[in-house]
Length: 256
Ligand code: NAD
Image (cartoon, rainbow, N blue to C red):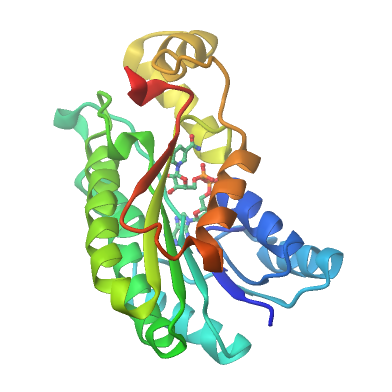
């Protein structure tokens, strides 16, 4: 049996890396994201790995659309084994200038969507007596940085949610874990560089070396492939006792 994975935000960055790794390992994939070439990406990955894929571009700001995405996945594939709550956005600003709409969008996409998707997936996973929920939190789910009120709040919230779902899923062979990456060079991070440069009054080069990677002992971006390997491990049948935990891939940031 080929298992089925729904990965939110899988037409870019970390989500795409996870989707490719899962497809290479025989998973059928429900791709999702706002990128205009999403269908093309899904088709290419499917053809290359001989697995079934589909694509949705629903907006995770809307709870009913999140539920629709999960239902659509089940309707198309007939199962839902792995849910990776990965989609996320970032906005960097001192609190007194932080726009309310940006705060609310970050909470909705980075945290609330994980709740609505997990809730909708729960009934299928319970029926199957198998489910693997993987939340992509962040080192910012465990540590704070200035100018990231909304992001740090949401990512800490996701870790709390992960623990609760780990407990509630235990009787049904549903696990829930969080992956906490340090800095990964994806479009989300590329977009932050100019904002951070402005907030810190530095050049973009200085922001990378003195702000972003400052707290990592390993002075390089975390490879997407390492996160994908971690997700694949958490999704395995044999990982049934790994639950309610966070897995930190942060170049030694939180070791300090
Ligand atoms: P990315 O910008 O490359 O990808 C984000 C994905 O989310 C895209 O597919 C985008 O279309 C989707 N998305 C954004 N808003 C959406 C919305 N309203 N509705 C539906 N889809 C939406 O970002 P990434 O760096 O790959 O980030 C993926 C996850 O990893 C995020 O949760 C992010 O917070 C987390 N993370 C990233 C880093 C990093 O350094 N890049 C570090 C730690 C955690």
